Length: 519
Image (cartoon, rainbow, N blue to C red; front, side):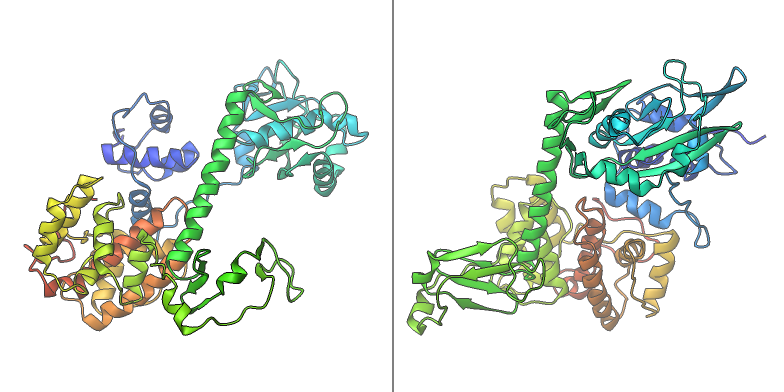
């Protein structure tokens, strides 16, 4: 009999990261249970409840991505995430009891029971409308039809009304009563000949969902309903504040993405003091006398193409004189982590390279190319390191990390196994193919991080261009996990192309060498 064993601390860290992402316990269990080491599925539940491994820190998003990318052998397939209305998932919610079936755990903040279903007349649907709104404003969940309230026994629906009702009619009823409209999936479950109707409600990304009219006695216009444990009711102030805070965080993330587009040159900026509009493809200057009459149009339409964004200028826009151009203040592009990495990958010459070096010493993000910028200055690496060491830093650990990298004491090299390790060997042989998916980007970045100094320069330049495409695909990755992997890979490319000109690392990185210090 195979002995059951415990998880290591590093595995517990990965489990916590998966739980943070909302993975189901059984999906997580798949990654750690092996024929030569059986792990109880209850162990995942213990970690979730902080009864096991409570002192272990959660793995970083990029570390989880690297683990998933290298998991198992190359021929193994990762189990797909089950649909929330998969028959196995639904059946697992019930247990045999008293000759029938009973809902495990009863009503929760993710499950609400109703004995029957009627879409018409409208007031007969009001209780389900209320439940849909409440679940969409919380974490999403299930409305189970044909379940007796109180005993939670699956008595089944009395007729085929639910089965014969088109989901489009249900969505139409939602759209006429709630805004924004929740997304609902319809399914059925046969439990010993008793039909249970299922409406799965997704958590709404743009909550709160509001009632836009009165429906029966259960829905009041302007009401915001929320699913609490065992009941759906008007939302309390605390939960409403959490929803508003989440919206603000998303807005900040979206604003950050736009700033990165400006920093990378994909979007242009306008200086309302000088009138200069600048972007990657060039710049022009609007006469200052016209600035006061500029109107910004959120969604314009100069060519009758719906949704085309536009900037509408009231008045005639003409080139200003050369003298006025010289008086115009030129705005330097903002330094951001994305700009530091992207300018390196695009091999752009920078007007103020020291700004990109100092930025890294005052930023919490660890891995960004540095030798590319050092080699564009007129100073020696040791002089730059001395200047940084003597500066007052907001984040001393970040400054010290940059200094260690300049001194050759820390490298972006990290040994790889599994899929990244196998791909690294191909890259070393010059067998380079471009990734096309998110998963392939992560594997490719992990392989690049493990490349030794002996890789041919022409191959490294090819890899550099490929990483640019990987970074483009990671632009909407708000959590930053993929970007973190790509950033570190870019650092390794930076070391392979530039660092050798300035430093001699204490040890030569080779595939299989222990990982350099730092994360």
